[in-house]
Length: 311
Image (cartoon, one colour):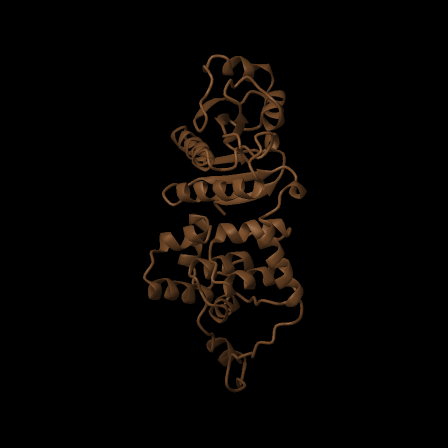
């Protein structure tokens, strides 16, 4: 998937560029900044001394030295003052400028920390929301693999009300789905040959029919689904391609299908939804609420330690 939230150490990310949440001097500091400088070695600091600092929201690029990436992009996030002093705009600018700089340098992949969410005090749920929004906007017009790296899953939490609402929904729906199963065939086949010939519409066929019916472009669909273009091409060229469950559900979300329609689509890929699965109940929660923001859904899945939607 083009956008992933991962739990890892950013200095270990094997990508074209990692982003350093720096201070205005670019001469190192605590947190992520200090960890990147220590891992890169003294050459990074020496190069940073030549850059003349960096203003909040802007970005500058250096070599990576001892890090496993090719480049380090330094950006300065805003200090949190309650959110009424231009902090959201400045934080979004950090992501946009870093992505544009990576793109102009030929980077195909980039890893961000959760900028400003440490010593600068930006609330983690708000910081992640802005990060996902800014990255998603960029990916609408550009091809790049983007990682948001969360060092400690326990230190991150989605908004308390959303977390509470989802937790309550999980508690209230932790039984089995009561869905009426529709038989594939109205009568038993005489032999295996006739059974094979009675194949219904495949996942791929239904997917592209739904895209056509809704009048959206294929590009919009796979980008809204957080699906890589290459995987989408495989599905496009193979009527009987079998996607993973997160991929199938991601398309249902991108198409804004109702719960029965979503179950029908993922059923074509051989899956269903069950109240015995926390992942499935969270998906049901968002669909029944009419909330089809895949980034918001992935935030919740991450918070509950579940697989994310996409390929």
